[in-house]
Image 1 (cartoon, rainbow, N blue to C red):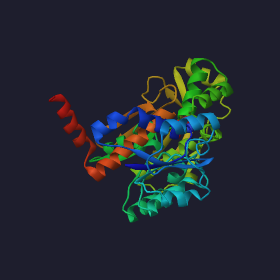
Image 2: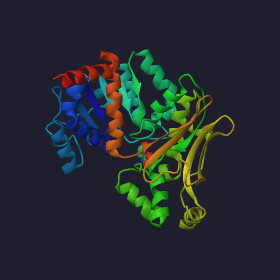
Image 3: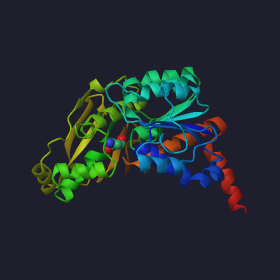
Image 4: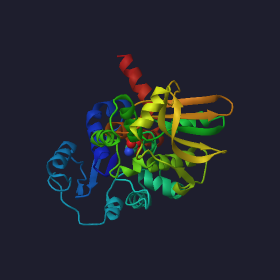
Length: 355
Ligand code: HSE
């Protein structure tokens, strides 16, 4: 399966590493032999129709800061959308830096992929929050798939879990922690008494924060994920402007410590319900509540009319984590084209088990 990778930052590089680390497993278990034929970052394009040497590309990125410069390929002085259209490939992996105002360049990349009959796997939140229905329509119209499980929950399949919860039941509300950076900051302030700025620096160094971390701390990253979640699971027609947003910027150590003393914790909670609409705000919760999680984790509670509440918890940010969601989506797409991955996997596993 030929792939084009747009975006070679923390997530894009992690995805390349994961493909290499899982190479044998992917072929043996799922029959997937991925071949990356194009990689784009801010330095330009590296293309090779026979498959890029990912080790070389990663080395070039580490040494020069750009993939196009010295990895054995050549800079392509053409518009990225034209390159995406022209490359012979089945799937675009879109992991460029997100833009919550315009959705660009991710939106145009995805549009170019759909129009040239390529499936899209993305963790790019901006285009999804701004043009959720338009992107789905474009995919449908061109007979290809759009998958985006890494856009919410990082490595944790929040959207898929929510979809499963809603089958045969009815979701009446969703609430949870959707931003790993804020949760990391609040946990560090609470547990180690770190000042806000030091805790934020830690989140940046760990690769959790957005390129512009104000999107995290002002609550917009949570708001965007809430919009995607509500549109996907509650069939809302929401946009970012429909969310009442308050972030954690300026949260004082005193406030966090007081909550702790009272047996509670401050967490940035995103919530969608018929009564209150869409909100993001720092909220006091009981320390023994399932949503009271630590570090760069996410936790989401789905309230179901007939079966009650269910919570999913897991890592919500980070390169390897989000890359694993991209790979999971890729396997889903492959399964839909070639038959369910589980069927192939169980067939192969039984072969192994039976000698
Ligand atoms: N900045 C985001 C977060 C990355 O901290 O949750 C994952 O979407």
